[in-house]
Length: 164
Length: 272
Image (cartoon, rainbow over all chains, first blue to last red):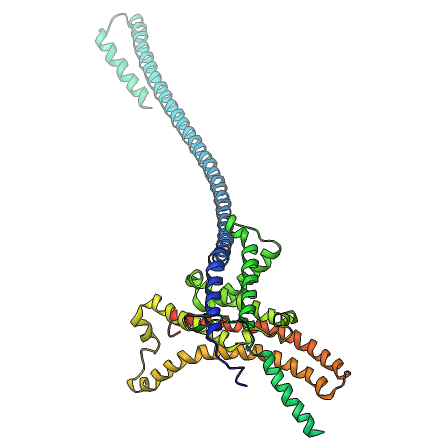
């Protein structure tokens, strides 16, 4: 049985030498480059996935922004149309009011003018009546009365007439 | 009859031990008074190392040439195992930041032990000592002890590199325990420092030797009973044992590597 657990210095030294040779050669030429390549690939895949996710997010964001922009533009257009309509409506009302005011003014002015003309005509007629009456009276009475007397008489008569 | 069979079995027991032991000196060689004789286990070790270096360099050639290689064939097979060791052993044990630092050692442990274990299963190597028994190099206690000693120093070096010389030894005991507990704890920790590599040594050596002993023991009834028909059953059983041994070879390489990595990891990240 002592064979199985026999210690062998030579084998120990050979094991260490062999292991160090394997470690140095494969460690530098195989394991390190392979681990680096695996880490690099892992990193690359993760980065690519993250990039893809970010790109999709960005695209979604842009689409949303675009939609928002379209909605906003549509809303703005509606507002502009509504404002235009309102302005037109207001202008129409203003124009109508102004026209009405103007026409009323014209009407009033015409009325005033007519009244003035009538009064003027009346006073002219009155004067003429006085003159005619005087002339007639003169002819009838033949200058028995003075002109001043006649005028006063007619004036009185007209005042009476006018009072009725 | 019983007496004679007992005598035969004793002889067979000796034969089995002789078969698995490292007694055969192929070339006697001494340097500065140290016996550096080439035994059959040294030759097995060299064959394994040579095969591994050749295969490893060949399969990994594209990683040295190309920036981002797409592995195929043998390269892909090697990469699969390397990635298995990396993600299954290295990252959980030593942490992602230390993979590149401790990767080469852990990978070398795994692949060299695995190669030796698998080579031990091939019954071709008994011809290197004229049919005097082909064994597994990893079934040799001295060889596994040598590997475990490397782990022993790697654990210390990992801690010292990470925390400095004095801090590493302080890390071995938890900081927030009463002084009285330390009286018990410090000897336990010192003991565990030596028990760990010892357990690694015995686990690997015993497992690899046990398979061979079992196979030889199953063949033994043929010679004890002098009956060729028993051989049919023996061979059938040993075919089964061989398949089992393939699993054991992989598992033991994995266990040795995993525990080494875990111990190194504990030294890097203490009190976790």
